[in-house]
Image (cartoon, rainbow, N blue to C red; front, top):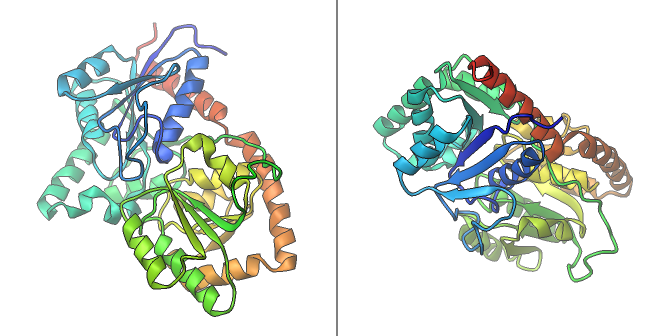
Length: 383
């Protein structure tokens, strides 16, 4: 049911506003659906590029969601003042817009939803890791102080966020709202210009995502006489290092780097893979895994955080130990055995039906809408 009063929702994050990684794409797509529910939404960001995506044209051009590039604190203060509710999308890099926005919300008692987009295990791979111990302590102390404010409500895409709160020493309830995805049917006849590969990965090319372990696994398999073809889609802070590893192990014929590809085109590539693979060391959810499952593609991924929940504890995917190239190689080899291949394809079709029903942007927007209304009622904003 459409909102009778047009609530103004201000989203704040520190990444490109509509293209890039999971935070960017999910926030933009969900807000498109929030608009159809009667909300007036804005996405404000402090950065137009990131480690993952650097050259996206028309980054602020859209006919759907209002996008704002933040350049001053005064500008952010005005946007927060005008909003009915502020939705901050936080990663443990402690970027400025999310932290300044949180501080302003607490000081002005503005209803605020603080969404954890990464979990505690992400910290060693984040920008905050290079800070001094004193600076880290200051940032975490401020974060804890702000999050305990009564006008700040917490959300996350999986129950793994609760473990993060425990490690931060925060005793508050998290509203779990699963991330939605695009439900595109797999079409094996389409996209003839894209060559078929055995394994495809989509996301940041980095140590955080375990790409080095995937490279090692392919090296192990090649030594055993098996030549698997792998396509790595995305950019990232460690892309050059990963390319050097591929060259060092003489795997150039096995592993292809495409660079960043716009989100709307990813399905073209997923339609031409036997398995989707995701060797990440930490995930709060796993958007790319869900996108693959929505297309009925068998998945191999690590048994960590949100990925465990997204795959229903392995019911929808082959789970491997994180940071374990040998286990990854063994599971890849086993997956392509004739009997297992049939089994995994059947499992993927079951997952596709489940994901297409449960994990949609429309469902996510509806859940967010209910959460927004409950927050506004608690803050006595409704007459």
